[in-house]
Length: 320
Length: 320
Image (cartoon, rainbow over all chains, first blue to last red; front, side):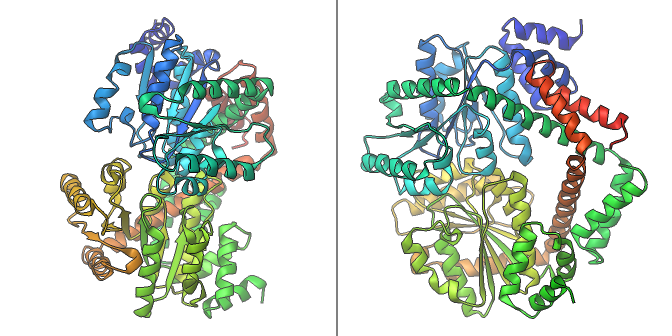
């Protein structure tokens, strides 16, 4: 039996070390990646994927932590993927947060993984997706994905979750800022966290007004819930809202729609990726490319023209 | 004379309407895009490109506005590209901001353009780059590019500027948050804005400490400047810092390094883009793709396997 087969067997026996190893392999696109994902794929599709996003400092990590605690009491296994570079789960925490979260780190039914946010752009959402798939195949009931919800890559990640929770705080005009940042358009559940602070009710009203204006084709009316994540307040309503959104998705057959959309995105992404590798792995392509770069540096051509000429040359020489 | 030639002629005569039209055409990748960029390209490379980034609400737009005013008094023409969805320049402003900025909108030597931040991921930094090139060829002296500095796409945009300014405010632990968000790594000039507020000095010290730890290969020591953008305070130092960084780039021949890096990125991007269009424009490819999507939906294959099989099929049939 090959090492990979052995690894996969241990993975399906529920071996956490094997799961961590599988995640590393697929995340780094190791050679065995395809064999692994082939084996895992039939088991993918049972986990509920919930995205948690919002501005830095809104209390997303604390929300994730409390939510995880409650889900654990319901005997659900939980996977946490931290894409947010400011999240304590990402290891970027100040000491207090880390200590506070140590209970989760020790729970064998909680799997925590942080994603590096630097590096290739397209890569981030692809890697987050594949790590979610691995946790899903591992039998994780709920996958919580935490991002900072401002950038485009982060919005793309939220697009791969079943439910998007937006966490805001009653401070410095967050409502208006958030609307503009596109958060209002993607949220399916809104938490107004630190709801004991001044301005919480105003923020709730503001969000509800904006949602009223939004009124798109969807029939889902996003609830706005006041929470105090540190104290766990409002979390019964939050769990109820998550349950209703799950019902809504099921009743409207949106889980199938969602699955097909994700499959298409994943095949497209991988196909384009391989197709581009094919291009760059060819030494002739590299030579032609370097020659054209020189021409543009000397202002003998423009980048667009150079790209077009490279393509024509490659075609002429039947290199593509 | 074709319409495009005519447009280019008017562009080089300094016709603002022609410039706006050219921007629209290249931004939307119109058919004439290549002809236009070919004509413009010899004139690209004289503008100074400055990125302004930071969290929402830090005062980036006000900083851009004041800076523009000062540059205008030095008789420099200014281009403003707002990628930040929360920026008043992006048209997402609340009324007060818009009124306040109307003086800039009326100045014929100030060109303001906002970029839509939704849509394709890779597209955002590409479009920002090409719009900068157009403004550059139009003879704009200084191009200010405003983004919200959290997402990956936005960090990519900052990579295409000569100088990156990070604007922070003494609030809610911005220093620590910013460090984690990767802002500390990309900043070449730091503004602690709203410096009359409590905590400004602490934030300055914090940033300086982090920069001390950073100490990478570069010999540039990023200055940390206290500003009050609304009052224009600290802007003499800011202008001086921008001038020193320009000197630094020139003295170390970094402008050439920067130019080559950008040329490579642009050719690569356009080549990959055309290469992928070539793939998807082929109806046979679409047919094979749809067949494989069906297989994955039925769990007869995994997305990775499907992508690989599509590639093999295409090769076998000499479609690529």
